[in-house]
Length: 417
Image: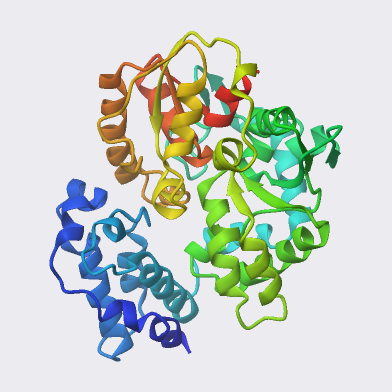
């Protein structure tokens, strides 16, 4: 059964010409100079597993875990090989054959139960001071507890965003009614992102529903190979959001947007909810995309923000969803903003969700190139459309005592309203 996942992407595997274009853009290869880190190496391994030449082993699983899924290789491939799909298929096959590590299995087990997840997050927010001490830029561990001493984490919010706002947030004479999917980080940590999105959408004449029943989008399960759990979470969200009857679903993170727009229809293609998932995916928009193109914000309402801004483009927002121009357009439309572009705004920051936990030193090395780019740009504020990127960048900035502040693009925009 495990090879069935790879059989589903065999057409992608055989397209690879082993040309090496992926090597030139792979952030991990640039740091390690190790061929197994490159896409073509992993494609060859996937082909060997599919042909029965290689068994599914824990060691092989480690090779496929060494990937940021940043899609730089996909964007640079002359044959159009969807390496990201091959990686996900291989991880699914290996997870089924070898099982998941205990930390991943535990974390995903909590995610499977939204009520438990909510309870754990609320409890941790109350006791986090026992295990972490505050410092400039966040919190650091008081005890090793399996974490690097130098780690810097943002504090959990005392009250999650969903509990701060009503479920229905109507606007008189609204042009549209949309559902806001917050994602985990905007709900439990960066609540200002959710508040900024709500304010900006209402200012654009849009009524907003913040469904209380929403939970993790399921991408962490999918990227770790737990396909059935990802499918279960997809079903839950398709049922919830389809029943709302809203005109659109607005996301605050490229990865969450990909889950709703790209992965839910695939996960549920043979499911009774498949048709609903496909219909829902047609009306999923990133918050910047919504406020620039779908329900444009009246830019004359924006107040002056006297700041030098630079922008980091998240991999799954830019390469994944193709949302590249809209965030920049909104930033540059704010009166008083001086935009200072990065040399390579779309280069992966190295966080990649759980990759920053399982491969911390390598993730920090990749991040350093992004921080160097930020410093040379001279921006005071780094705007980005991904809270996971924000968290990873904030840690590096705090560790090095840099003066820059990182904000979600929508928070920056909302500060001008």
